[in-house]
Length: 262
Image (cartoon, rainbow, N blue to C red; front, top):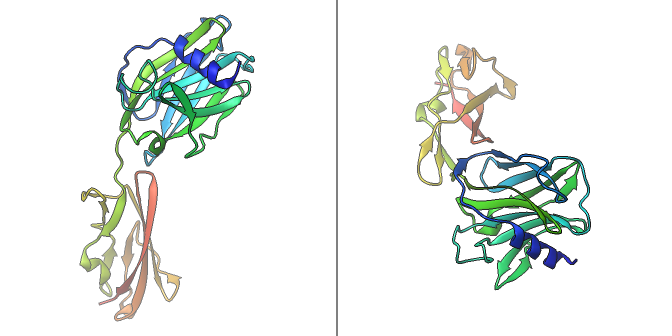
């Protein structure tokens, strides 16, 4: 059976039903021993990346097994959640694995057209079918409906269908810091505080963590706890360098600022 016919048959055999919304990484389970001769689906884990650009799928079988020549695992995606687009069930994309390999395609006019924008990096080993879906390749939806199923001959095992909601994570576009930060005072306690990050939706957020290194002529000044420093009186009028690293939404941002001691 060729790949196109196999995937078409698998999609036609998988029933559909509406599901509930979920947010973030999600795990879906299925009773085992109910698949007859089809690959016995046990669990699907969907993990979005920190920036929301990709989502990793891990489809786990009940036992470690190779797919027979006419068996397949199929993940169907309705990116626009419209029943009038895609295949007869409204699914716009299909990710599939069978004995001959794995791939992703888009339904257009009854044809499953291969997608090649980004590799899905598929693997099928140890009872797991894993791949990574780049959301930009399916129209960058904030949410989509998906279905996981397997087929072997007339036997079908359907794991789940659910809508998975992806939060939009604005990107960092700049820093905001008080001007007083640039002028530490000799003999006084200097504290790095009041830092914020500006996002590309013009909102402002506090960083999750702040780490600092303060140096004079390349030599570090010992902190007085966290990002607090006691500035020696002898450094009045001198130039210092402050390196600050902020974290937000799983990413780190660093900047080095020149300081003049008053």
